[in-house]
Image 1: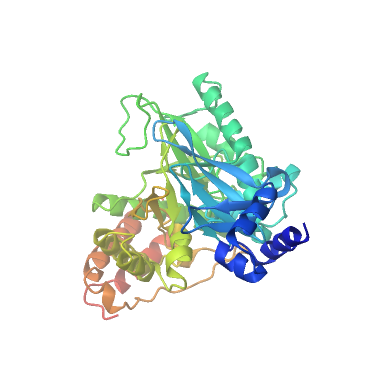
Image 2: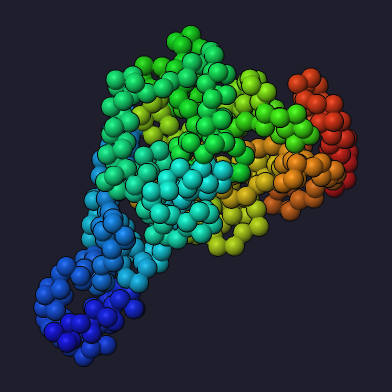
Length: 463
């Protein structure tokens, strides 16, 4: 018994270990070791097949226990259990696929594809405010891995992508599906969404909407629209009856101020940038603009949803960087590493280089790794670039206090790896700035900025 207790204490502090390491540490034979493990089966777990076996001590995560089921939602809305997350001492996790239980993936913290779903940004803060019963920290930056797992497992029925974490989130999802079948779920009218959007914006500002944990600081909410049969739709994210589409909606402040005007301008600019990309056959989210209640609403189609209940797996560049890249300077440099590792295709690398260049040329200073996403099948190492979103001239955003920052756009330089795509990006940027110059919905000050930026982006301008 003393040896078993010593073994447990050692595994608690050292984490998962190969049997050979344990036998060497305690100077015991293999039969003796596995008798000890069998005698403590409620505490010690054996993971993997004979050649890659790891021994570890189970760790309970609050009221979730040590074994948490992971479910996957298909594009048709079917739900299946496809993995189990096993929490281990001191703070690692094993991800065990149902289809390959003898090859668990052991991570030093929460797996990167689950950590990518943590509450963040505007909607993350709303989530914490709306779920005080979970006893989570008040700030999203203070969430530990265990805090994140509690959030995902207890209120994760509407996560980005196609995963459900934990039994409670599964049950909440099933209830939501049942409500949608019974049509008791609130659907927004495709032709007249403005009234709903005004109310949903107020709820989002008041912290009454938990919804998706989509990142970003811009105020936003999610909605499901009922689309008429004769409406134009170029997206694939529709149900078989062509009746619903899921959207993410950003909105400007409903006050008369410089900040409100500028955020309105930026939402309009985002819609123009997305339009330019789509018109040039670069996948970008579909978008519409609406005006109501003193606000401007930018509605974009969600690429991780299919109809009302179907979903598609997605992952941010940030998650891919954390697992395979490490430190990175920009989108293009990260994707170059991922292409070398055969995770992304050469075609996607070229597109990302173009997007990196286009973003620089339209003054998008918010090109962080959470603003680029990929379609991802869990258990598969391959990823595909998802449609572009959050592409706008953030250089001209107001300060946190709402003041005009008076920043001046300077024609950016570029690395040699962008040489091939830079002329194309320059042409697209000129299309964008020209459209902005001519758009009467923009304020005079924003149109003046657009004209200045168009001059900076002359083809004969030396960077």
